[in-house]
Image (cartoon, rainbow, N blue to C red; front, side, top):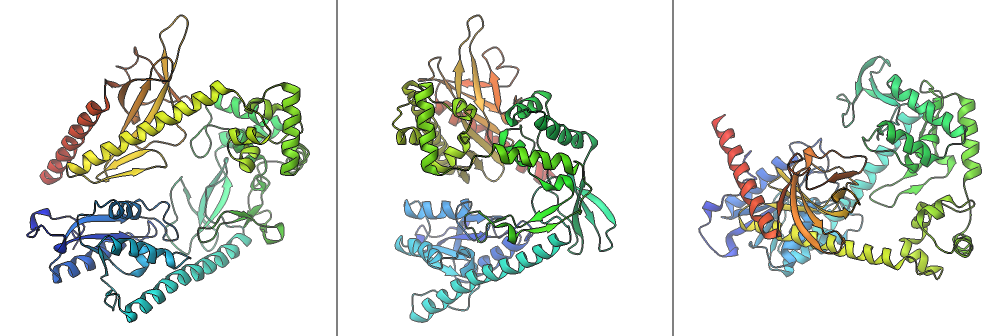
Length: 534
């Protein structure tokens, strides 16, 4: 049964889709380590009894069933069915709730309807009714969907009540620890049992997690940030100095204005635990709760910042905060335009009495949209460069789609993740797609720049490299993501540094595609051989 997810193409005795089936399996959290195997075992038994051959598997691991956004397996399934790429006539699902515990019960019915419309019959292998379209099956399915949604609502309420109770006692409930603090596991008698690193969880349900001061170096950084802000340094200047020193946030990334702003407002540094400041239940939009709903436990943590220092910083932040309506925001921006003659993100951020660029973007969307609302055309050459860059990024996304199709034709499974523009092949190989812009110099050869806003997984990076005018495509290069040495969010390379960085150059994307397919197939065959020899 452990091999129930393996596709056996050699069993296909009939070319018709009548005997070909796909399976969709999903588990909600990483803790449900056997859930997918159990689903696959039941599905495999059903397929064997009904003379069906499973030729395709769609899976979502550790993804919530409340929404479809991050469920690449279900997205791929629906895309294949809609585009007539489904080479099967049956879709086998464990039960009705595997579609998801959507709060709108019609959503799972919608996905089943898409499959039926394309001629794919949906079967629920663990349910006690036949999904034959009869009145009885329709009633039962709808009841099951309502029950799935209600289960999520009841579970959310119970979890929230338990979290409030634990937070009121000073325990840490979910999320990362603030910079300069660490998570410690304690037992029922508050005895220390160990320290949790990033990504680690406590083992026993009876254990609890408390915050405590971290390393001396990080504690000193926190105190330095508070003192520098009181001396008059801006949040941007503090972030620049920390990045210059090579200091990283607790997420392992560079500092920015928002991360400094968040740090300066954390009462955890004076010993207070605050919970329920924000709410985001059942996939809804995140909302800020009123203060009377906050759960506060004072003195639960050893303070690392003096209360007087924190109070003075809070007062300074409040004085610098601008509370104005959206209409007034636009009026002040027009006045700034009349005064300066032009606008840009640095000009807006530096202007006194104006919200930051980030606040404007949050209220009005992109800068171009904001400028249009006040009748400002902006820098036309900049917008032209931006449009060109977007066009080239779209070209890379098209290349990723072509490579995905090529891998699937060669017998591999390939899934594209739009969050980091990464193609994952056979759940083992990662290929990211980026665009590198050129920077010309007077006395030295040009260099190319890569921007990384999210961490790339280990694997390859396929780069579309631009010519010196940053409008035309120069060539393509492939580089291993593990060998890239970033300065903050940027990686620079030149023709002279290509060899030392293990960067290979190609004239066309067809060459890139051929080399990647050969390399991946060779690597996977080698891994299988090593596994068999073991």
